[in-house]
Length: 170
Image (cartoon, rainbow, N blue to C red; front, side):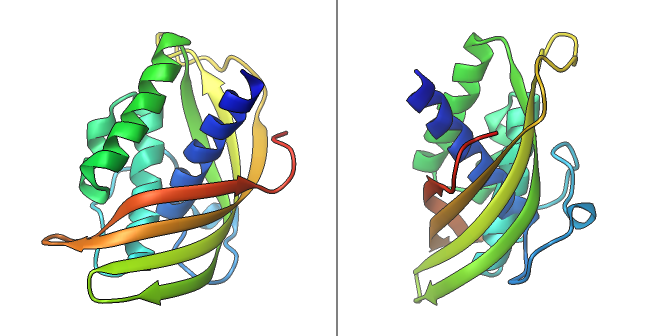
């Protein structure tokens, strides 16, 4: 169960990082938008699409509504995100997460597919959806991530996310 929780946290954090990042240098936490801020998705480049994806997924996790992130990903990735939201709903919790650092490693772009690697640092906290009260301490995690994107009519969207934890989730 601990392995499942760690994997789910990793996925959640990766998504948030990509959406709120946007540059190849590290970001100060003041530069990263909050989970509930709304913005239209910028899918014009792979980097912008990943950042939009992370921001939208953070909003989805905070609101419990996967539809708010659907424009930034393939339907298959949407199923994975919705599954994690449903898992947390069964646990009677939501997640407020914040991307603290996002550094692009490499980008390989072709006409219809791109692969972007990044290093990410996240903080997150569980809350009770009915009351909005936090149900535990703020935790942090760091990840090495690989995003595979595909080009569709509306721009670049995230198709697959792979994340490896760098150390323990604290």
